[in-house]
Length: 196
Image (cartoon, rainbow, N blue to C red):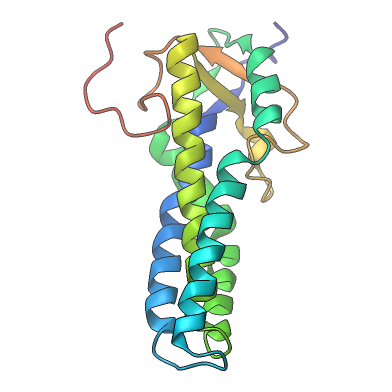
């Protein structure tokens, strides 16, 4: 394995995926709730029905998007070296949210503004994106449990707003045993200490 001197900073793939789920979900729910206040051009009923359809489509698109890329990167994952530094779950989540905070704000404002045309629809679309990320993280967790490995991505490949662990900048994953780090398979906070 080719490791630079001093090792690499590694972030959990599932944690990066999961990091955007809660902000998108809650911003979407709030935007949809506020978006029900104005009647809009289409009326609330059409807005909610449109939003429900967008929610389902967004959830499916995000949950199933780029799965082949994730599978290919996981299949070729090299074992992490002893000098690699495993980033904490909280740090990974905070970094993702900090790099994407303005996109989240703009998406929220756009969802609120669109409510004057189609009430609640864009808010439900945002919430669907968040739900899709949760489902994708859960899918990654099932793969990690089945293979008994945790998947990691180099932190420097996630910088500069490139927060996708399956983006073009990502060349390969690293893997560790199932007990490494402070997050369970799928990226959730580890509830009990791992057995080493």
